[in-house]
Length: 258
Image 1 (tube, rainbow, N blue to C red):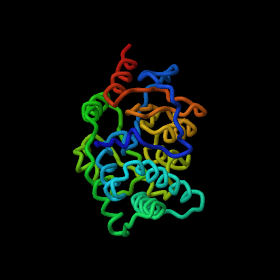
Image 2 (cartoon, rainbow, N blue to C red):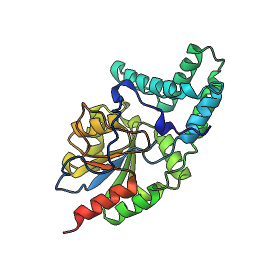
Image 3 (cartoon, rainbow, N blue to C red):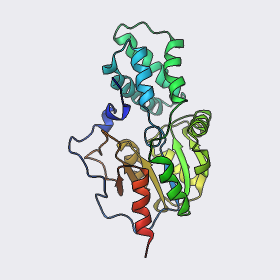
Image 4 (cartoon, helix red, strand yellow):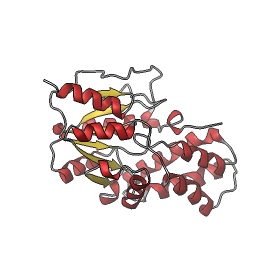
């Protein structure tokens, strides 16, 4: 059975509506096009399917536990924020996998959990739309920046392996501030790093919780509706909704025209 992590997750704060949202804007987009576009990476740009396969193998073939692992990982990243006790996101992922294994009486050593998480995360490929979409945005003269919960070394390796490094002006990670998204301080710090006003920036993500944080920080937002992804009804809707990065680029390009 081929798994796609996009169809499995997310954490309690990102419970999703069962109503499918069309891949188009759900409200009037901002008049001003962004000067800087920040991108979430995992799942937004990179396909996490092989991570789901690896986690399933580590959990004795229990593909039904992949969602529990991912939810646990995100849960404890928020706990990390709350108690001011930062750990690399990959380390939280490893510990979360060990916890889920313990809960279901599955023998799993720390070394095995580390192998199951860190190896596939270092070997992710971009979704088919990503490269053409980034090229289109790059041609518009917009600065492109990654903003991720991963570590500095982690995102460097991921972008190099996926052959995406050339499309980004800068890569930012929460390792510098030791706070995970969607804490507002992360977005505010990122804006300062790029010397851009919130209204002149945009966050692109396939996660409703990331969109919610950026919107609250005053940024423009674009929700990439990967399979199984929906916006959360209690939060402000994204300024743009697109099925993929290329579709978003086309929407922005159309607004740029007189």
